[in-house]
Length: 404
Length: 153
Image (cartoon, rainbow over all chains, first blue to last red; front, side, top):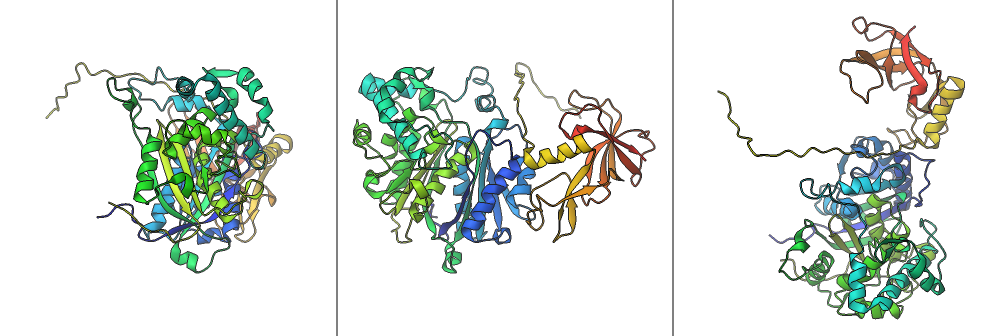
């Protein structure tokens, strides 16, 4: 039986976001979720009664709330409906989108509402994330989510000056994008003239990973509504955005630590080449009009651009230095400001396809790309280098290539 | 027949999670608590289309999705004990020494029960249907424990 073939096509027809902030004392979790849900319903022109199924997700342990989907049903609208809870660490939001896509594609539900949320201000992120580690061999030893390894590897490969400038250029580019997005959490108004100062004086976290490079801890929620092609044909309030394909790659954390083996392929690279091959995309930089990437730090972001776009050597640095990833560059990265600007974790990976879909619709507002966006790429990241990658399309006109 | 299980040389690692956290009551929940704290009033939120009054507060009617956040109604501080259990074990996280009664009270004017501690009656004598009244805490903490407990009228 063929895999990855949809029983029917699925479109995103509603998107709702809260603002992202570390100060949401005025809302409890269910109220914050509901704000996103109400906006998604309004965006889709639907009522809660039009929703057949709800998928809900956030990080385990981060707010110390057991079964939050139970309590949040005051805000999700799940009363009397089928609901599934999904929690896959940082990838949760993207996995929710994959699950909603599959639920509609299967034909089991016509219209599905997916909700990702996090209220990091209420919890203890490092306490939660430390409990991710293998309880037998690593939990007592693990420290949290920060790593300086990629910075050192890039410095080793490209030289200190060029590597540090690349990471800071990316960071300032993200801030310039975030300044155009009123929902973004951290909007500093950084200028490229501040590069040298930030490279030298931003507080170091681990090695050359500095505070300014790292993503925020935000509160916020995102809701998206998905429906079938048949339903879309009956009319939608806003233009539909089609989910062409998605891939999810998981693995255990000790795999890269095998002595005597070559460095294993990065999950992002494996996800990208597999997804592009089965969709006949030869040149992703040429094909896609925008990439909303889950970028937890500026160092990871720069490094991962090479993996996701299947680039070689210093191609990614040359593109960055040439402004190819700028808002109106060849292939804009994160017009929203990305994860570095806003990181409500359970929603973060959902914001990537949500923002990519808004770009396709032309509804991104201040951070809308000026040229037409027809093909969008969105990624999620979490766990021990888990990767989710999905392709969104404006038109329902792609050719199926290989689905073996 | 007794099962023989061999656990020799199978180690168990003790775990202990400590995850400090906060829970924001939000503007609406805080308003509910302020009424209890400052005015000794228990407020509900009424959905007019459904004719149902909810307590504790919620922004939207769970049934029909009408926004009810501004439709406050004052409930009685007395009500009917509609359900209860007797807590008979002690633990550090529990608010009282056992045995004590944990009850669900339908306050006058409400359609949903409020869960709270019932005192002033022996656990052997308690039964559903009795009338109880709120006893407000002398020392307030801006939590639901600003109602200290309920006791028979």
